[in-house]
Each structure stands twice: as C-alpha cells, then as structure tokens.
Image (tube, rainbow, N blue to C red; front, side):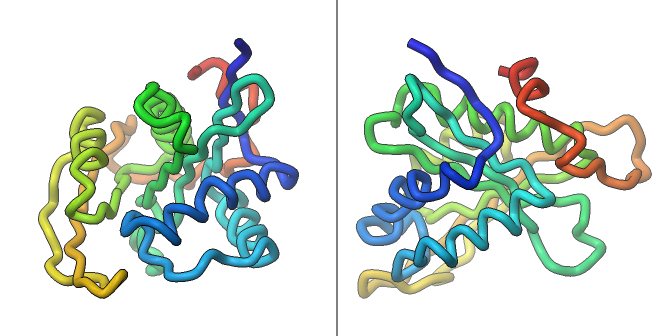
Amino acid sequence: MQEQIRFVTFNDIPRILEIYTPYITDTTISFEYEPPSLEEFTARVQTTSSKYPYLVYERDSVILGFAYGSPYQERIAYNFDADLSVYLAPEAQKGGIGRKLYTCLLDLLQKQGFYNVYACITATNQRSIDFHKSLGFRDLGAHPRAGYKFDQWLDIVWMDKQLPQASDLPQPLKPITAFNNDDILKLF
C-alpha cells in the first residue's frame, strides 16, 4: 500500500469535487445548497492554494481526502489567521487520514507564520468537535441558528488553536510556493 500527502494539482480537482459533493447534497456539514460547477470549484482551489496549503491524501493513486487553509476574515488585521477545512471520502473515514491531513496542514501553516487557526463546525457534528478537541482546539462557543439548510435552523460552533511562533510580533508570511511536496514528506 502506497500512501502520500501532497499539494493539490489541477488534475485532482474533479476527484476532490466528487468527495465534497455529498457533503453539500446529503449533510449539514457544508452550508452550501448546490454543488459548484467544476469551473467554479477549480477557480476556488486555484485562489485558495495560491496562499494557503491545499493538501490531498492519496492511497494507491486514489485520492481519499483533502484539507486546506483559507482566509479567516477579509480585513488585513486577520492576515495571520486561517480557517481550516477537511473532507474525506466515505471509505476513508475513521482511519486516521483526517488526523494525518490536519497535522500536515497545521505544520505547514505554522511554518508559513500563521498564529491562529479556526474551524467552524455544525453543532450537531460531534465527531468533528471531538476530533478538533483531540488536536488541541478549544471551543469558542456556539452561534445559535447561524444557518438554514434542509428546512431547519442550524447552530455552529467556532473552535480555535494557536500555533506557536518564535516571536510575538508577526513576521511577513512565507509564501506557500516556498514549500514543496518534499517538505510534506518530512512532516508525514
């Protein structure tokens, strides 16, 4: 069995959209109502991966999951914060793949110079809340009735984790292009 975590490529986008789509159509994990087109999703991946790590987990040449950082908020004061996401194919759940992806993602974000990472989780998704707690995230509290999907109001929970940095004064972020797949191999 060959497994690897690596940066996303253009060729991966149809498969990661395939993994993501059931989260939209069948769950309240994603608050999107309709799956994006391949063109729209490709633009999202390209925009996000130009600044943040966008990783895929591959086993025997099959992508089973992906994780990425993205902007937490748009104001410049939030430049040292990142929002996190992870999605796994059904056959990859409960096998440690999410933890491997998140660990690499957190390490890369720390190396880039990010200080804080956040996760926004549907409050009924206790498995994700427990997963984040196990990685050292703390619960920042619930936002009642934050989203409406499948004819119901849904609460969300925000969680955060501080990434240790050498200085309390932020330095310019290292561009994601300063890292390559060899850097991930050292983490994985």
